[in-house]
Length: 476
Image 1 (cartoon, rainbow, N blue to C red):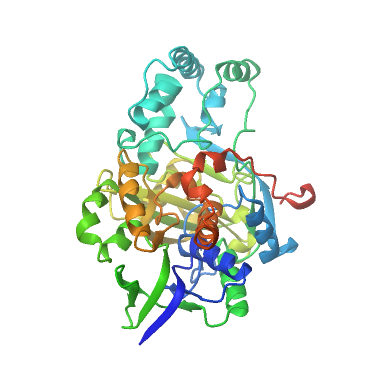
Image 2 (cartoon, helix red, strand yellow):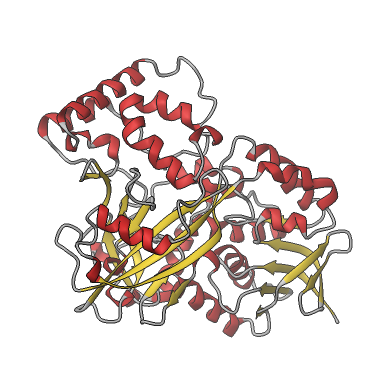
């Protein structure tokens, strides 16, 4: 059986649902969305484990660079459907917490290390512009100096990207890293003052129930009600004939399209297409890391030192994780009874450049939480939950843009528009709001020729300062 549609969307994560939302808002009728899984959300999904604890597939929070995204979030879950938080993010280093951004709070370090780090930062500022960095590792050294690079930036980034920073370019950085301001840091040291005001997500919101996945499940339900018969779950694409404009499904059915919006990983899309022989050589330039998400359900209540912390970074080698989220702080309903339980969620990266230290990721995570003081006693641990994401981060590798410059136009010339976190392979615009916007903007491009600003001008999008998401200044 062959079905025909004008616009076929593959994937019901934020990008695919963004495309569907825009198509429906523009009163388009000739479209279909197919999702391989049985539920919406993709990498922004959530699950409830057998013990009644909710877990996200990674440390997600809601903030936005787009007014229409904010308005949709308000509408989907309603005024009572959100908790609102002031960000508290911290770095655990030298047996103490340092507020993030680390480079603005060096006064928290031992005095000799703080002084050496500031001196290195000052030297870096004096030498700024002398030489253009060739990679992210050189950018770290040139921007922050030896002390900050050694203590935090290099070990942390090696952990999170699961490869040496020399394997990354640095042009993706934008507003994601606060660069040093020597005078500000010196003043913070003199006054012993914490400086935590920086950041595009210094205020954020989180669903009251259901984790991040509740957002996308709700949107999918809305679309199914408004456009019955256009969203289909459990439908996995297995091949793409770009010459015939036809997708074959695992069921044996085929769908013919005029335009295909693919949100599957770009390398997967190319390999399953008839363009693989001519484009396959470019795939070696696309690198990714895998992510292990380990949820740790805990007895009792969080200690006062962790009670209001949101997420924490861990650059040192006494734990396998690079980040831990205080997940029950985001929403009490993330645990079955917040008077008896709380939860932490850790992320561990993996790649061929940085394989796991051992196959016992759960055990290593618990031991790391004990070593870093997050958990006082192993008896506090109620249970662990573990999900491995084969693709965790799309890496801004040295030759990524060379690959994208060949792959995306070649696919587009055959009516295939690869978009989203791994569809466009641009880490700098891969948050939920960015991914949703890519779906919206590719529809506008197909229908009106409008510029896809998020894909092509990420620095412009990221320069927008998100307005605080909390209604009436409220906080949760």
